[in-house]
Image (cartoon, rainbow, N blue to C red; front, side):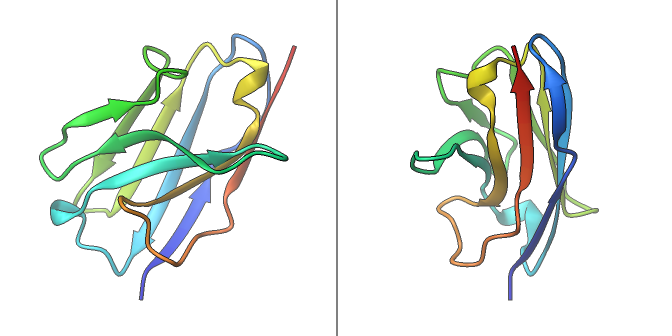
Length: 114
């Protein structure tokens, strides 16, 4: 059974940085494609960053150049370094496989003030 626990969110001013972390179980990280997703109030959940089994990455255009996704296979952890944060990055952030498993974690809230 997949279990995901996100952490690292918080309140930050525009232009600031945060690093999100995800601890996963029930997933073989070395073979999995993983992603960070976010959901803002009143909006659909969207994928913002992807990392494949060979560490190939891709990003949503809205975060490209500002966010960096990494993973640690032995520790089964996923990270999202977020720089130059904007108010429009405010959302609950979730990690999951790609495509996503039915089991989602509780997410971690990121709030960016202007």
